Image (cartoon, rainbow, N blue to C red):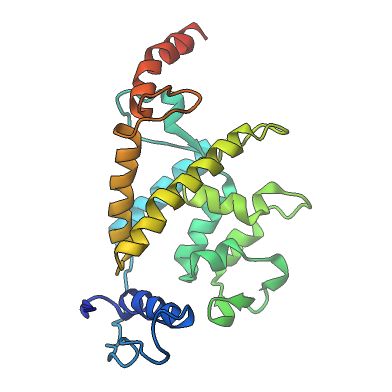
Length: 261
């Protein structure tokens, strides 16, 4: 068996996959102990990369945040086939505050979204996180950052303080909820996840060692296209058609219902 590593890629992307694969092969008895061929491969130090927003980018970001604070929502550019109400994204004030804090402190996104009031020392001008990615960490809070924190409501039960709500808002994720006491929707999603696991991931990982997530994404996208456009389904709605054909056939009916409403 030959193993070719692209040493130009960062070491944390290259080595974990083959190291883990061969170690597991030893644990499962497929290879003899201490036979991992990657164990003594020399690793090149990864060069640290820095990316700072330019003054022009900071000005553009500030202008968007001011518009969101004024209107309470973000309006996306017009696009054919997209209704005006679908272009408006509601943004909670704490999401805007989180973005400003990221710019002012240089902290990680998870460190800002997971901040707790009891960790913040306003007098000392810092937030003492006990559980950062690198362990205990003090995040310096300049006066503008402290002013932003002081403006955030602190009432008990305030939904804007919930870490999940902030993450969804910052990542621009549309959170769809299922009906209570109705597991059908969850069942459909879980069944699709099992199909992806059985028909793609378990097959792909047996055939190929992925050096980067982007490589895996390319193969997953190709499988999804096959799943949607070529693979015939026998489910509740498809009746032997592909999901794409089912969607196209139902589009005129959906438009009629939208116009009637």
